[in-house]
Each structure stands twice: as structure tokens, then as C-alpha cells.
Length: 421
Ligand SMILES: Cc1ncc(COP(=O)(O)O)c(C=O)c1O
Image 1: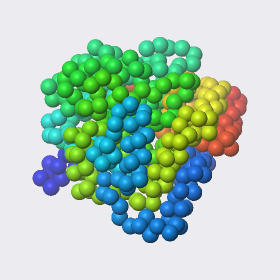
Image 2 (image 1 turned 60 degrees about the vertical axis):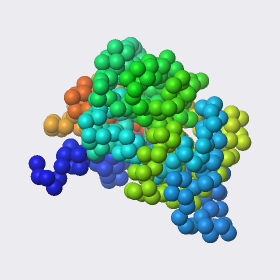
Image 3 (image 1 turned 180 degrees about the vertical axis):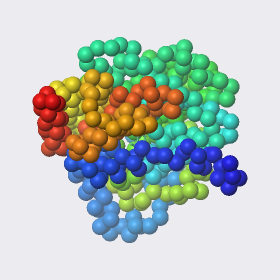
Image 4 (image 1 turned 135 degrees about the vertical axis):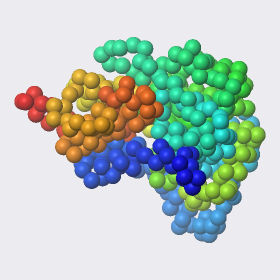
């Protein structure tokens, strides 16, 4: 390979499922349950805060702000997560505001992964982890969650890691493990016991944990989101990553953050200040006001962090019913706003043959012929595992009732056609 285009820049990192499927959905779909974003508005209190930030008297909100995070935002994030983690958090050294959780992830890998380092990634995984590790010069080491129970209606909790297999992935080269709970795309919420197994291995092998918690508020059926940084010994080796996009249903604002010990966050600051420098000031101010409001309403029935999961749980249940009715077997997620459906018993006779995995072909066919968009789940797996998980597709249910009804109508029509075949 040419000296000018080295592997860690291009080869194998240039494919992106979102680029391909977002375009496809925009071209063909009438009902888009593909990419992960709500089609409803953020709550009024954050929208009003944004309007105030750009339309108010404070001209400073249109200008550069503090590079590592707007002062009002880092202050309230430190207060909020300090309360959740039960420890003092310094807004200036323990918190870094980033352009979405995406940049937070990028900073973690660029700052803390070096050539030759191994990074453990739990499958299925948010697809960007793999190229980000490679671009930093690291080697991804994969371990799949596997269903431990088969049944009529499975839950994401039925998918688990094999502790012995997990232990075997830790080597002298392991620098970090990426944890994503609640997990995209499966919706699995790791239990305290499962996190303890991971934490023990991190401590034993002196390994860092990049804990992607962007769906931290989206947990259902009374399940608890346990923050791995709160487990004994884990604060010192964990970077927790959050997203205002997911937290306040405003993915386009692109405000994210990391919370962790200064000894780690200081290296993220170096990457951040020498790449994007800082995130839009007015958006940060609006998110700060949103957190301030939620801090005051914490745990109360009118808290957005209480109300949003209640609403989403109903949407989840509606989509579970619609998919079950037509024979796509949904795996009920305990968290996130995604749902995986198993297509093993839902065959499409005229699916074009190609080298692509079955789920890619299925989704492309479904978008073009039925106007319904989803995302193929094999995109969330490493190359060797793709063939084992190509019978699954992911739907996003953070959608208006009318959108979910339209999806339901498409599925029902489809079933009627199938039964008349
Ligand atoms: C698991 C996970 N992490 C990070 C992100 C990126 O979040 P943001 O939109 O804040 O950059 C997403 C977005 O879908 C995600 O699903």
C-alpha cells in the first residue's frame, strides 16, 4: 500500500451503513424507522432555552465559549452526575463537552489508544467503534452477546456474555473495553452483576472502560441503569459518555460530554482542543438550562427523564405487537429506542440474490417495495460474525403515534398480500 494512504486512514474504514441507508430511506421510504432519531420535538423547556440563548440580550452566547465546555453546562453536568455517582465532580477537570457523543468517543480512542493496543468491543456494537479504534492504530477484539434462551418472545436480557470467553479476551495488550449500556442496537441493559464481571476484569488487567451511556434515561419495565463508574475502583479507569441529542430528543444539536478522572480526561482535552475546539455555545447553554430544570425536578412525575421512557415504553410495546402480528419476531428491548426483529420465519420470496448479507438485501427490498425503512443488524457486527446475525433488522420506535400507525398499516397490507400469494 502506498505510503500516502495508510491503513489506519482509509482501507476498510471507508464504508458506512448510515451514509448508504439514510440516502436510501430519503429516496424511497414513506415511513422511516431506520436511523435513530425521534420524529417528535424536544420538550418545550429546552426549545425555549435555545430560543432565549439566540434571541436574548446576552451577545456572548453567539461567540466562542470555554473550549472544554460552556461554564454553565459543565457546572450543571458536574452537579448532576455528582449526584448520580455519589461523588464530588469538578466541572473544570472531570467534565469535557464535545460535539455529540460521537466526538466524545473519537476523543477517547484518539487520546488513549496507541499503536498495538487492543480494545475489546462487545457485539452487536454501535458501528463507529471499530473504525475509530483502527484510526487510532489499535486492534479491535470482539466478543458477541449470545442468546442464552430461545422462546416465543425474547428479551434483550436473554442475550448475555460468556464470562469465561470475556476473560479470554483480556491480554497484555488490552488497553480498554467499550461498554454500551443500554446497548444500541439490541436494547440490552447490563445488570449490576454483569457489570461487576467486566469491572473485575478491568481491575485485574489494568484496563480502561469507555462507557457509552447515551441511552442512560431510556430504560423500561422498572429496570435500573447502573453506571459502571459507580462500582468500586471503576471511577479511576472509566470515561462515561453522554449525549444531549438522546437525552433531550434533539440529535441535531450535537452536544455530548464525557465525565471521568482528570488523569484520563486531560488527554481527551488535548485531542478536543486540537480538532473541533468547541461545540456551539447557544446549544450548550440550552442543554445547561435543560439539565438545570431536570435537576430541580429529579425523580418527580413531571421530569422529562421520567416521562420520556414511560412514553417510549408504550411505543415499544405497540411496535412489538405490530411486528409479532406479521410474524417478524421482535426481541423486546429493556432500553434504548431500538428494537431488533428476527426474520428467520419471515421470508420474502423475490429477494434479489447478491453477495450482500441477507438483512442488507431484505432492508433494501423493503424500503424500495414497501416504503418502510429499517437498518440491517449485521452492520453492527465484525466481518467474521456478520453471517451469523444476518437474519435480524433494527427498527427505531422514537416516533409519533401516526408514524408507528403508518408502519403498522404497511406491515398489515404486506401480510394480506403474503397470505393471498
Ligand atoms: C451508542 C451510541 N453512541 C453514540 C452515539 C452518538 O451520539 P451523538 O448523536 O450525541 O453524537 C449514538 C447515536 O446514535 C449511539 O447510538
